[in-house]
Length: 329
Image 1: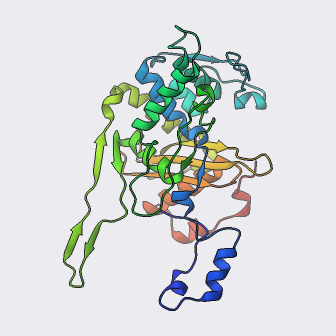
Image 2: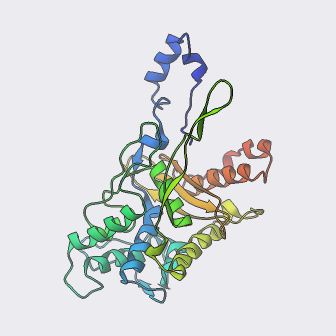
Image 3: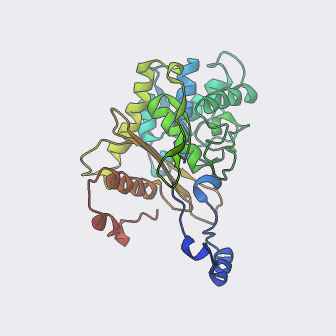
């Protein structure tokens, strides 16, 4: 659980360095603000596993469903575009695993529309679609704080525009730690109550209180083959991130990138959520770089943290950051 920029808390213990503390309070980067638990932004495409779960659980898509990406989604009045069209192509005919791999907006626009029309059997109803997205976002823990023992802002699941909410837009608004709990649920089939505390010991080292892990089993929401399809899509996401995970060996990683625009005058937020090893998850990670340009930057930070955790590269090598390795577009 890391928030950056940080500060030297030794200068705030016992005798407080008043000038230092005053500087922290006026620093525009807000080092005293815990970005990991308090900052909320749109999740971008990291939300697409929610839409995948909702679509599969309600039956509006199946494992054999293929949707043709036509570039411009014309079933709603604002005619949102798939991001690929801005680069001169579309994703073609794809299933849910491939849609996660390609982060195909068009596919998930259609999932949102199908949720709002009961798979085209009724007229479009905004409330119907958004209620189903809220149901499965809640099931994955995005309707409440995670349980950590420090200050944490409430998450916000979108309450309007299911077609846009299905790609992580509308008014979805989550902390990084909320995304962490969510990707842990996707990876493990268990919704955990997060805790920072492991145990409290007295001066003699005797355990005074032990904090046990608690979780709710949500694996029955989907069949194993349906979970496998989502996990396969997340594995393919990382396999396609050649500029970040190319040559990364020692542990297989699965994940999902996300790019979220907050204001037009500043760069997009960069996000990555993931887990490792892919076949038998031991750890999960959620990274947000506010106004970090590209999701590849969040993926690169996550890669380095995972590498450090598994001792795959030396700390000196990981800290030798080269400016040309930062993506700005």
